[in-house]
Amino acid sequence: MRIWTGTKRTAPDNRARSGSRAGRVNGLRRPLMTLVVLAAAGALAAGCGSSGPGSGSGGSGGAASPVGSGSSGVAMVNAASSKLGMVLVDGSGRTLYLFEKDQPNQSACSGACVAAWPVDQSSGTPKGGSGVKASLLGTIKRGDGSTQVTYDHHPLYYYSGDSGAGQQNGQGINAFGAAWFAVAPAGGAVSGGATATTTANGSGYGSGGGYGFGG
Amino acid sequence: MRAPDRAANPASVATVPLHRGARARSAIGSWTLRVGAAAALGVDAAVHWQNAPAYDAVTGTVSQGALFRTEAVVAVVTALLVLIRPRRSSWVAALLVAGSALGAVLLYRYVDVGVPGPLPDMYENTWQVPGKLLSAYAEAAAVVLVALGLLTHRKRPGMQRLLPVAAIPRKRG
Image 1 (spheres, rainbow over the protein chains, first blue to last red):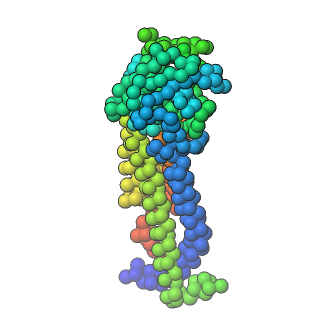
Image 2 (cartoon, each protein chain N blue to C red; image 1 turned 180 degrees about the horizontal axis):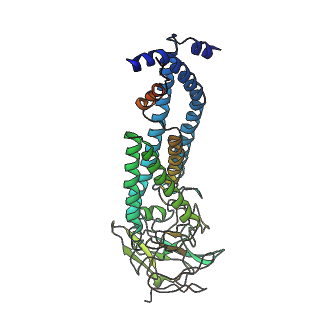
Image 3 (cartoon, chains in turn blue, brown; image 1 turned 135 degrees about the vertical axis):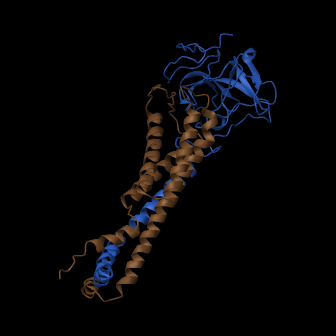
């Protein structure tokens, strides 16, 4: 009874106080909540817009679906001059890369890795242009049935951060457990613009591109 | 001027709808934070789970793929806790999960920390990985939302109601 009486006597008072306080707090909180929700939605939308499987349009560049090559045609490999020196490019001038983690004629890149580093595909024996040793060109069969171009036993890839010809944004990037390098016409990795590292199979990088599988 | 009038008139029933409305708005705000935080943690979990197979070959004592799967499961669990059981401990757990995930992705994006202990070398100086940027945004959003959830966290209404009653001075005699 005492508790009930006390509650009856003081409850309106409490309600008035807490109601007033709640009203004041909510007056401040509502815009804050709106801001937070809008900011979160904006951040998520920005994230969705700037990154996604296959979109290849992250924070550093535009879309980068492989051009001038693919399963529908025979791949072309050329040598081209770049700020890194002579590097291998495809028929449209896009830079080709090798992955340190790959074994000779065996790709260690799949799933999300392939989305970031699309493979250089070919429907037949790739053709070598000027400056390229045609004898070093080859292909391997991937797990999904597609055919990937190799050079001196290195499976070749594009970089989704390159938006066109003449770019080497993937040079020296570490991703998926190892580094990625542009490929020199001699068959090794181009070491310019990257920290020299040791390959998974013990081979080292020299200043001129001493990357090799020992084969 | 209206609020003091209501306070001065304890018998006024006009304060009751205001109080309920305030509580309703507070509940909406709480739900917004909970749903937003859970959604952000869900995005984080989905990206990590989806990308995990590509990182199975990145190994130390434990593989990066296994760490990604663990992160995904823990993020889902904390998202559910925040959604279903929004206690202080749930908010703290979610803050730890989102904060550590955001810290890790930023650290390994910009600093080559090598192979610390049993962890693999997860240095990855690019955002050009599917969902990586999205995941980082989601983690940042989760940190903000969860921190706000923690700051605005209140005890259960039943507990609140007891406090004024306990504070009532009793008359003697």
